[in-house]
Length: 153
Image 1: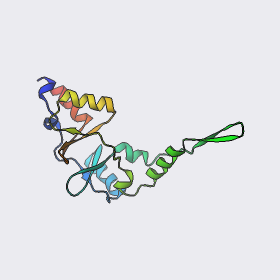
Image 2 (image 1 turned 90 degrees about the horizontal axis):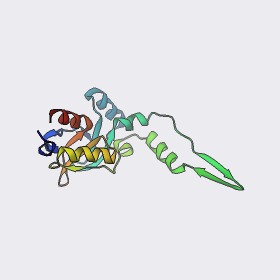
Image 3 (image 1 turned 45 degrees about the horizontal axis):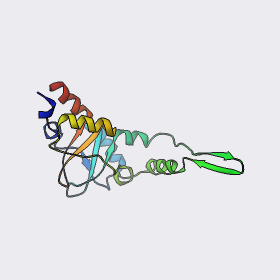
Image 4 (image 1 turned 30 degrees about the vertical axis):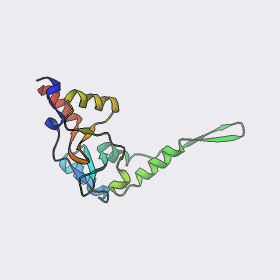
């Protein structure tokens, strides 16, 4: 079967895991472990996408904080990486999905073909693609779904 005949709707999980903004990070982590998840959508009550949390986000929350360095040049001290430090600190202190979720999520429509799905994942360096119809989430595709589809095709 050619890749152009396989659409996102054919390979997506049409019941993706999701939570709400106020869901506790501890509850999210438990679901990742018990349901063997790699990603979870953050949705509002109308199933509109607000963000995404991945297993990498949960792992990164446990890593050591990198303290910013400074470079002395003549009589000036130039701080390096202050904004990154502030972002890391906020993520390490995350208590709810709202605190940890990425809100700049790459999304796709259900009618794009498998080749385009693979291209978007590769070009954008994303492992999860929420599938939208209008403003509503109708599914999610992860890298494993694409690999299974490529093997089958």
